[in-house]
Length: 489
Image (cartoon, rainbow, N blue to C red):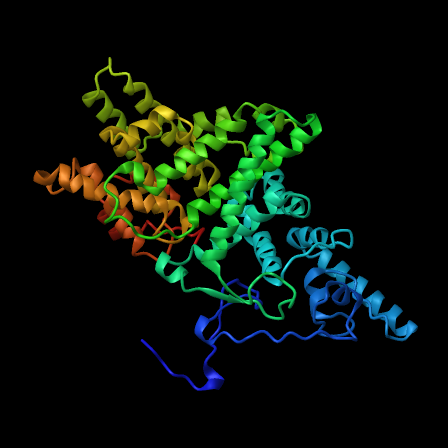
């Protein structure tokens, strides 16, 4: 639908990042050309970087955003000293405001005069807002600090982490949208440096894919360096640490990036995005799994978040705790799979990983733990091969895992993720296979998917306390009004 708007109202900005006005969605058609001006009276930082200075005093816009000392050489000496004192005072106030700003101060310190576009700076600042809680438990200060504070500091010394941070920030911004909508999101980078290689109007989806591609290329290079054993122990530690961090960041990007709906074109399980994800992720994790003990004793130990529930807590909370889907799968295996079938061990191992991820989610109140079942199963070549061969029991297990992730993993946000693609494929497969039973093998399958549908219609996250009941009819929980969580929106 085409609309001709008056020239004064053609740009209708929608904030993409909360509390930030630098990044906005803008129609590509009406995006203005950049005004390339520089000031002769700007501060020393803007002159050094050859960018336009706002000339605001005591601090210009750029120095306020980056936390740098703002100095005007053309000012009177006494005035310059006063301005510098004010700048230092303001910088100290920003330093005291919290962990995120401390990280940003470090990134933009005088010793890190690196080339970064305004768009990339905003991506980095946005990571500081969500990265800690996305990749770690907020209740675990050590690991939260690692992802919120330590990882961003590596931006200025590691290209693979730099691109991985840009990638996951773009992906998180896009995660609120379906694929078709995400392709139409443009970013206007205001006051862009005229010498920068970054285009003035940026397609966020394309830029996210470029960052992800660059990250994966560098991860492959790091793996070659490690495999070649061409570095000493200290360099090995840094390479492995950066590789582990970048791998986890790229996994986050791949999971939440909106994907095109190709379900009508896909006829084989092996062509699904989740299989591609498991294959590549499994290979990456197996590559440095043998070095995990080495890394856990290094400064990069924060990348390995503790997953074990204290034994006394486990016995108290989960010793007799039953999860409907897990219990049903165990019964299903015992009734359908022969004890002499070599695949039974693989099935039981997969069910154990599902149960463990549920317990971790419930104990730590951390929904990302649900997706760990997929990550851990990525390292089980036997299970991945069963999926590729369209083994029904393996697909049923993955169906339940994807149902739980779709229902409770609120940080996936959008409906076009890899778990939902698998769900759509499985529903189509199930309807063809069990046509005589209304397209379902059993009531548990039907009920589990009805939970997915109900959650997709709700604007509020479901309480984790009802996770154990998924597989029972969802209507009775809807009628009782006990589904909604008070913790997350």
